[in-house]
Amino acid sequence: GAVVSQHPSRVICKSGTSVKIECRSLDFQATTMFWYRQFPKQSLMLMATSNEGSKATYEQGVEKDKFLINHASLTLSTLTVTSAHPEDSSFYICSAPLTGYGTNEKLFFGSGTQLSVL
Amino acid sequence: AQKITQTQPGMFVQEKEAVTLDCTYDTSDQSYGLFWYKQPSSGEMIFLIYQGSYDEQNATEGRYSLNFQKARKSANLVISASQLGDSAMYFCAMRKGYGGATNKLIFGTGTLLAVQP
Image 1: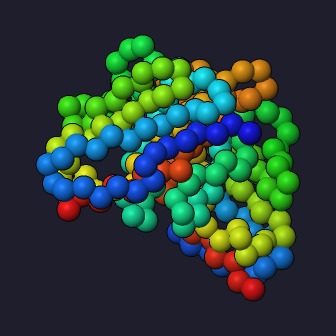
Image 2: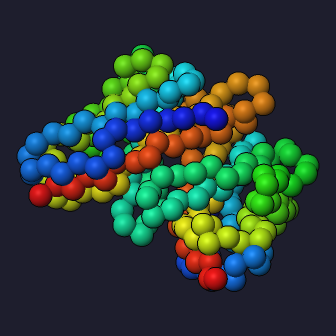
């Protein structure tokens, strides 16, 4: 089945530093990927849509300068949390749609990244 | 605007019994997709089942089936013969249409299922 790899699974950093999270589609190409954020015991909230070869589309209320997204290739999207602060601590998870006949364009998710900013 | 509602914050079920997790949705679109995902404590999102708005038959995937009632805008998940490993958070989600950015999912608030031995 389709696999989306997300790395790292857990990161602890100091306030003010930047953290990069990678999302790779391992056995399929994804021109679009999605980044979600999940606070404890809450649902997933879409942050942005990552587009290969063009700028990301951010949801309302999400700071584009804070959460930098780069879709470098058809299999890789990165999310960089710049100058992280404790309030950025959260679970970040990416997803990519599997396209093609018969796939129903199902979305597959990475395993998520737990970010803790101290 | 699209919206997904899961009214059951938590549920218990006895092992080997069936359980239904409720999901209702609101959309004015004709073309959409409905998904169920399982999220165990490890955090990963595991795809369970998909139902397209034009699909006439209810989707089934092993022990999972989706009770799709389009007129009522409901897409309940039925898990048959519950297993201890089914204990997890379950999210209902909706996608608007097909292709590109429309593939983004809107999630419900989730239902925490606990399977008791």
